[in-house]
Length: 150
Image: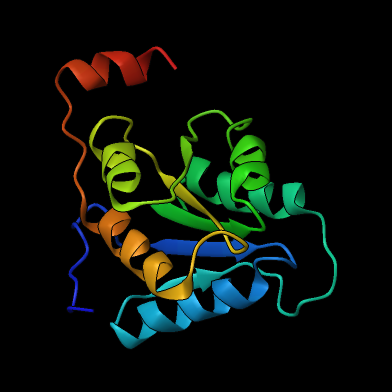
């Protein structure tokens, strides 16, 4: 992977998972740290069973209260985390599964959380998706009008 530079609007990145996503979360966190990106890990800190809505809520609230700019959530499919996080006002969590879905989640939807499925997304692809998410700018324009309606 090439070295990435975060878009200046993304100074703070937080990450969380459930037990199914724990190992991929750790891999992503270490990958970002290796690239000199500061990551705030809100847990869990082992692979013991936990409830994903609790971690989605913690991370979503950090973004809502501007303690972090963007977030990364990992569970088995990515879907449970996205559903849970999207219950929080101002959160736009997107399940990303390929390069195009990830790029469009930022360009058109101004997603502020990427959710990944550890059971469906290999580690190397996950790294690439996170890099795309963190470096792709929101296009605004007609998309801003639509995002405001959410």
